Image (cartoon, rainbow, N blue to C red; front, side, top):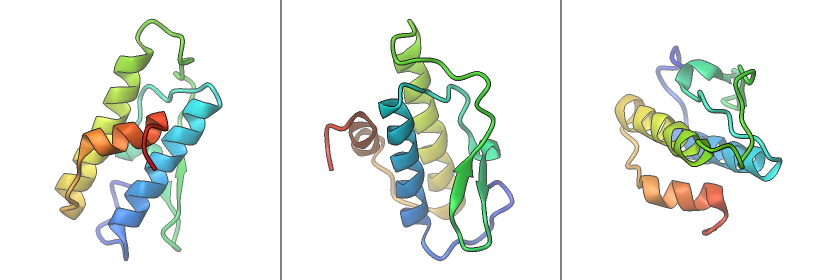
Length: 100
């Protein structure tokens, strides 16, 4: 993802990544090291998250901190790279299923 300079809809891509983080959480997995370097984007603009060996379960003692960091890393990147207006709290609530 760090090589992606333009995307037709960075807001949509960010939302899709957030949805993937949420789906992983529902499956009992927190990436723990999510960054733009661990997200691939194909020519059609879709993403895949890679590099999962360090994942933890939601009951891990540091799970909340890791999840927050994953969300912050991605939202901060989109803010810097694509100038997307980001409300981290809204995305955190989306991941946790507190918002739609």
